[in-house]
Image (tube, rainbow over all chains, first blue to last red; front, side):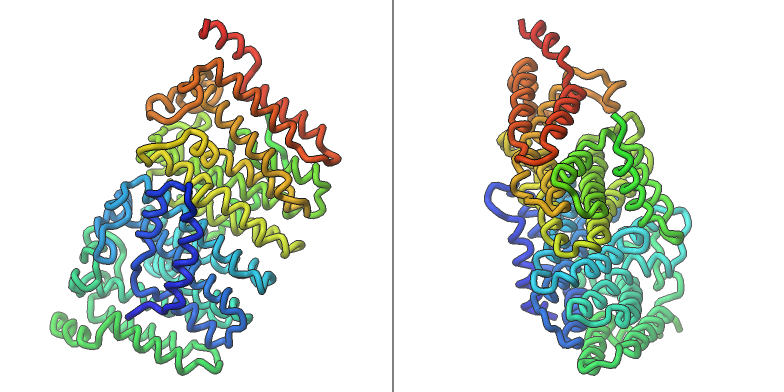
Length: 293
Length: 293
């Protein structure tokens, strides 16, 4: 799936902000490497799709919200790949940031991306300054402590973890921030869109577990079997592959049902259907049934 | 010097935000360890002092700005202490965050502190929402790329570095953000306060170099001689100790001269005098003269 040109151009604008002459060139290059070419841009696309469903009236703010969410996602990938976490040499089929630029620049690139995300929000809120504080509150909750993606990653450092708490924070929180930020950037009611983001986030996490077991490494661009190797909680490992695929379908259905009444509801549901087939092709259900038999 | 009670209480409020039941407890503890008991709180005190000199009209926003600046400073210390940078086991006389909680929680605590800083700004801007975007722009510039403290740290990864560029980004940028944010939070003209912050930041960096050579480790609470061991640019090493102390005095004088005309100007100058004596006691000038002779 090609990323929406609006998203790529919003990300280009954001990353360029940090690249003025006179800054440390390697850090600039590491940041660019972390953001481009990028993956499926699922979160910013969700943000955009929700804003459009809410009849967006401030496209610059929608773009800023979408870019901020993706920059924060990229920051988390850079830090998750570090030697002290996943020690992953590859990301999206290319060297991870610490493989290409060293561990120090990877730490700093992640930090700079978090700052850039908030900076991008502030710049984007010029036409609707009254939406900035609630947007920042939403985005911060999706990323920080106690329930955002940073907290989710921290559950991997705790001796005991409830799988649903871990997944809700590690993935669901930023999905919920993406859908709610899309609504809020468009002047809509953020709370009505929380459930949609949370179900999708949970579905996405289960899909990731399934793909960790099933997918061809040349397709998803990172080493597979990492969850197992790292002893991380995984739905596909704990419940079995066939049950995990059933759970994924259920979560996608709940997400679709939770879309609030709005003009763009059916277009959104169709986007969800397409995205879920991309993540977990129907054919895998049959393969997993054979394995379970 | 005891930290201003307003600062400690603003920091307590900010850190508590991240500690709701149900979050990962070790990450919460690591964040608290990074912020308390804390050091001299120089940056937030500057922020407060400038706001007061500008007749602050929104103390909640001043507090938020001061806390945000200090949280970002704490985040940078946690990451600078990591094994891939300074590998410092001690900070302020206590185990550094990665010594106490491990490298993974140190990375995450730094990330969470950056998010918390911006979240704190958003919460504090309730009475003056129109000041939020410019405040965020200021603070982001002081921290991010291309000229903030993250960029400053990244200069240590470059093969060639101009000492003044390095110091301006590594220390001066957040000092300038602190003074400008204090003015802006009080409804004043941020630009008029940039020079004051920049001169003080440069003075503080030179003082740090001098203290790295001179100070008793039991006084400053971290291993000394680290700049030398790490091969980092240092005014005290490049120019000699006596010249560095002369440079420090010159920078402090320039800072004092740059205070804009305002009701609190003389109180501010007196604060600068006290702080500079705390950092580089007059007695050191005589000792360094003996060494140079």
